[in-house]
Image (cartoon, rainbow over all chains, first blue to last red; front, top):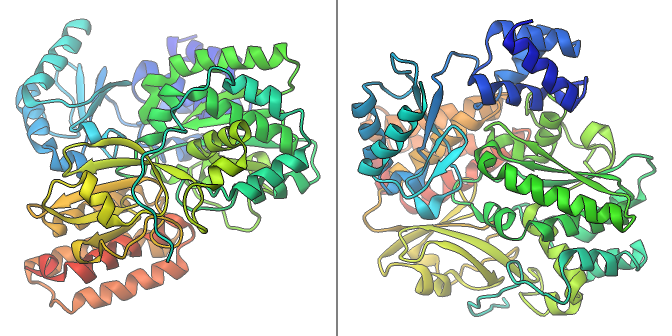
Length: 156
Length: 389
C-alpha cells in the first residue's frame, strides 16, 4: 500500500465509507499532499465505491481541491476589492519578484505555488494572504518576504 | 418611513455570566417548542445572512414536517466580499452559536447539527473543534440528545447558497438545486433541515436569554433588532460593529466615512451601490436596503469602473456554471464593460447589458446569478460616465 492509499484508508475510517465523506476525505488528502493526482482520485473512488468521474467532478468544482500539481506551500493572496484598494498588487509583485514565478506557477524547488483567491474575509485588515491554512492579515511587501522565508526554512 | 439614529449595540459579543449559552439551553428547553416558536416569531427576527426569511417561520415549517431524521445546519460559509462578521463570531462567541443550534434542534426534533465553515477559515478549525467537543460533552452530561459536527468548505462562494451547501456536504459539486422543495421539506440528505446563518443563530440564543421584548424594542417595524456590520474600504475605523437596524446611510457615513465618501456598497458584491446624493433617504434594513452586513466605503479617489470590474470578475469566477443565464451572463457583462471602456462598443451598449442583467434576474437558478443585476445597475445608473470614460 502506498502512503497515499494508507492516508485515504485512514480518512475513510474516520469519516465513514459513504458519499457524504467525500469532501472530508479529499480535503484530508489535500491537506497533506496539496493536490489530488489522477491516481489519488481513482483510489478514493474505489474505496468509496463511486465512479472516478464522480470524484473528479466533485474535486474539480472546488478551488481548494486542486487537481494540478502544486508546491509544498500554497500562497493565496486575496484579490477582491477591499484588498485591491489596500495594495494587493504590490504584494503580488513582491512575491513574484522574490520567488521568480508568476501567479499560477510553482517554484523550481517545488516549495511554493503562488495563487490569488477571492475574498478571504479580512477586508478590514487587508491586504491578506493565506499560506496553506495559516492567515496573514495587514501584510506589507517587506513583511511578506519575511513570512515566505520563514516557510522556506521550514520546508526541506 | 420610520427611521432610527445610529446606535451601537452589544448583544452578539456581550457575555452574561449569570446566564451562559449552555444555561440558556437548559432554561429554554424547559419550555414547549410551540412557545419558543412563538417567541421567535414575536421577536421579528429575520435571517441575517442577507435573504431575511423570518426565522420563527423557518423553524415552525421544519417542526411541522413528519420525519424521523431532521437536521440543523449553521451556514458559516461566509464568502460575500466585504463580510467578515461570522469569522469574528465563530472566533469570539462560538458557544452562542451552539446554543442557538441546540434550541433549534429541540424545537424541530433534530439530533444532529452541522456547522459548514468556509475553507478560508481552516486556521480556526482546531480551536473551534475543541469548543464543539466541550459543548457536546456538556449536552451529553445534561442528557440533551443533540450533537454538533464541523464540516469544511473548499473555496466556493456559491456553497453559501443553502441548497449548494447541502450538495457539498453530500460530496457533490456545489450546484444549487431547483426550489421547491425548500430545505424545511428536503434539505441535507433530503431530510427536513433548518439552515440558519451564524449571526441568526446567535440572536435566537440571545432572544431566548433576554426575551423577545428587549430584542423587539430595537429597530423598526420591518427590521427588528440589531445587526452586525462589517465595515471596510475608505474608513479610518474599519472593523465589526453591531448597530441598531433602521438607520440612514447619512448617519452611518458621518460615523464611519473619511469625510470624502463618494459611494457605499451595501451588502457586498451582490448588494447595491448607493451614491452620496442618496445617503439621506436610504435606510439600512428590510424596508430600505437589506444587507448581510457588508458595508464597503469608497471615497472620491476610487474609480467605480474598477469596483464594478472587480465584482464582475468575482461573479464570473464564482458562478457554478450550471445555468446559462448566470454562466454566460457574467462573462458577457465583464467583456461588455471592458469593450465600452476601450471604445469598441458605444456607451448605449450599457443599456443592452442592463437588459441582460434583467434577464439574469428572472432566469438564473439561484441568488448568485439573480443578484448580479444589483451592483451592475446601481453602479452603471449612478456612475455611468466613470464606466464609459
